[in-house]
Amino acid sequence: MPGLLHHRNNLRHVARKSPLGEPLRRRIARGYLTDLVTSRLRSGRRTVAGFSVRAPSTAFFEFLYHEVFLDHCYYFKCTTPTPFIVDCGSNIGMALLYFKLVYPDAEVLAFEPNPDAFAVLTENVASNGLLGVELRDIALGGTNGEVPFFKDADADASMVASTLEARGGENRIMVPQHRLSGFIDRPVDYLKIDIEGVEETVLADLVETEKIAYIDQMTIEYHHHIDGAADTLSTLLGKIEGAGFGYQIGSYLDHDIVKARGPVFQDVTVYAYNKRPVRRD
Image (tube, rainbow, N blue to C red; front, side):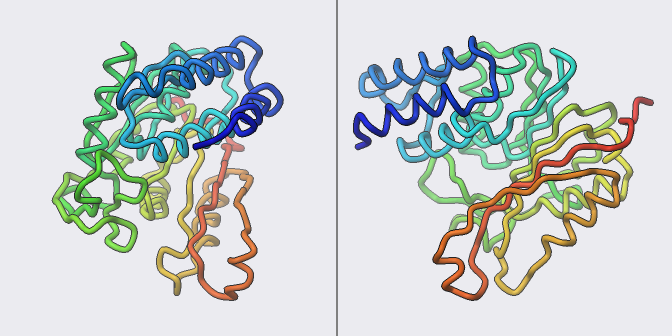
């Protein structure tokens, strides 16, 4: 169990590393302290910046909480207080809650194909009375139809569920799949893509249909070396460049990756911004 020093460091992280203004930093800090006191008393529910959240496990919750609310991996700056946000791979909704914290009047379209995670996502949206949120329990890919989906057999949600067998769990089910381009018909202020290995396919669909022109900013979690023989990050970046986007890249290079001198799985975050005027027709 994390000790006092761990919690103190996390609170310092909120105060010093946050891109948010003082009121929101205080709200996150208050939520963190409230959760420390009440998490043991409220089975299965946690407190996040004033939101009530159900999570499958402590480890699951704390990983997402640190990534989203302490490291602000999905922060973006927008000129409107009512951005349209598309959340691909919403899981239990931690990023969605973050979007609603920063932009309470945002309109969010969220996709989550894992039925277990979708049930938790739906509960977390409903229990917090969030408005302007549309949830779709479908996978995203290069075709419309029904596809195999691989997930853990005995979990409320999973970090590695996917339509790719190599990135999913041992339980195979069938889920509906659609092309993201079919849902994009107006400007998107921010697009989040975290779909466990299918990100390049979805991006290719947006480029081929020219729906990429509607996107102003996006963050893509690229899953490098799901297939150890495939080195295709340059393909993804080439599509981004060709569509008129600039980008920044972030990842963590562990010493074990270097020592392996071979293919090791790695998450790579790509933040991209449209250098051209966003399509408004």
